[in-house]
View 1 (cartoon, one colour):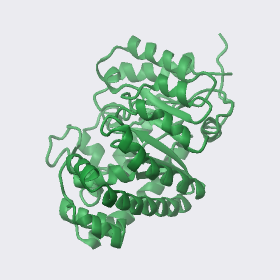
View 2 (view 1 turned 45 degrees about the vertical axis):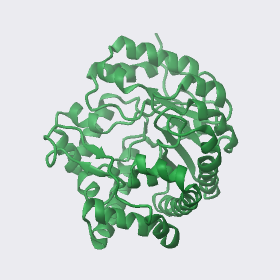
View 3 (view 1 turned 120 degrees about the vertical axis):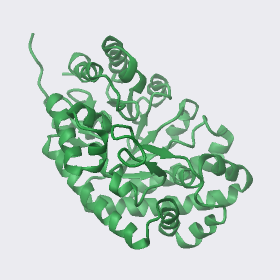
Length: 379
């Protein structure tokens, strides 16, 4: 049997896929973070707290699976020394609050108050997030600024390492939707009460966050040189709120963000955790070939292909449960269906449903990668 070879670079393949142009094979872009440490045989404490060990573990995954051609994870956003100073949720880490080989945790806690909407509207996203960090993490403004500067250095280092491995950066920068920013700082319960009880105030605050996010990401893109951005949006789907309120409050903000980033030459990858199946038709109102929808296993990815085919690329969606407790044959079977259905005609980025779980079975991860060569080639 003749072994087919890649005809495109990792970057060419990713750009063509987003543009819905022909490619030699499907982009392989699983989100790998804490699993890499387990694969490399180090504790999660070492992985989360030691930058060089963390990067070395990711190198080992790439060495084992060369077909992994696009790296979507930005680990500096999960680096424990920085998450203890800045970040939109309070965290518990292995080696401190948790056992050395436990997965880190993000805790849903109400930190900011309704009164802080006025702070956000008057003074902007930096003042709002700064107050959150001070309360949630106990970090002073000086500590926050130092942490952000260090994060910027690690972001550049991480992207450089990705490219040295021969991978593309699926995204080079990371941001979040306004609903995610507010719900993570206010807590999910309080945020949705605000949406119902003071919708005009929430909408005004979300517009301020959106404009601030566009400016931040444009500045980062200029510095990093990669004009693709992760946009976390897990908390505004029909799983949480009615389509009527989505249309009225969240969709205009989403359009503002996507269009604003496009104006800066940035392609947003919309990371849709939770079930967005009923929201999918609204994605046709966003500019064609100017964004990517990334799904986490909760949304029907096959319905997404049906609705969005010819409009935007779809990224996903090997379920975490299959990788953790399924069999290698089940992983292979689902991967085959992904390639044959979602990959038909192109516009498909093969990935995990959110992150590859820390406790994924090694034989299942091997099956995940092996499926690319078996089913994912167009050439």
